[in-house]
Length: 381
Image 1 (cartoon, rainbow, N blue to C red):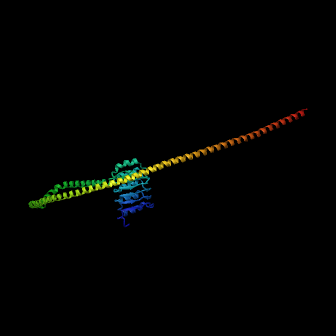
Image 2 (image 1 turned 135 degrees about the vertical axis):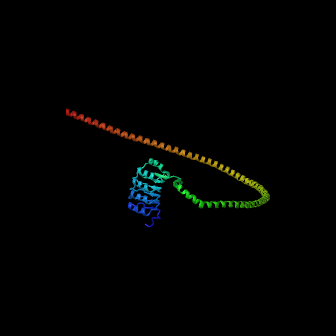
Image 3 (image 1 turned 120 degrees about the vertical axis):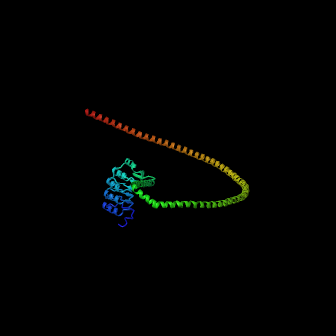
């Protein structure tokens, strides 16, 4: 209380206990609000918004983000009272449908920004259909809703001017109709009043105009004489300026020629000096070039010698490696032969042992058979 008249911007975001009664109190006190933010106030419904629309006539921007109590009837309440509403943010109001946003758009065509992000019951085809009712905005590309046109200020100014012209035309038509209705009675009174008041003024104006014409002719003659005198003086000054200009041109031409001669001499001397300096530079460059060539020849000879030395050392190292490889192969071959001989000897010993065992088993079996036959013969006998 006390500061509502000068308060222009008010934000009560996330006030979860903000009810319709509280909103009505705010609307009564803060009638001059331009921007009002009611985001995440879940208890706000169509009743409070209708009171806001009726009281806050200067409201330009309204935010109702994530307000669960905002339905289609809230849009109807806003559209009935808010005529200056240009920006409205309805993102996260999941209860809104096509009917509510259609009501808002058709009754508030001055709106240029509408954010409908998160309103899942509204599709993009509905936005394209409603865009014909909004002359100051287009379908948004960065969010789901409508965005202002690039020349929205010019369009608003043009619409306001057209509205004013229409109102002026209506007033003029009313005045013309009233004058036609009153012309019959007032004409005689107007003629008397004109003869009494306007006619003497018109006669005085005519006399004053005739005197003014005579005075203007006198002033014109005086101005002509003054102008003739000024033209003569200007012509003499022009002749004098031309003479002075010619003299200055001659003087400047002589100075220019002297400066050109001096520049030509300087250029010639500079050319000779540059030729001498170029000759000296060429001599020094030739000496450096000869020294560089000699140094390049020495480096090339050294490179060739190094290449041959490396080649010779590589051949010697390769020979040593080949000999070492042959020696290692010979040693490997001898080790293979010895290993094979040992394997052969081992297999021979093992074979002989196995053959001896087999012979012993056969002799033992024959002995058993002989003893068995002997026992059987004794038993039979």
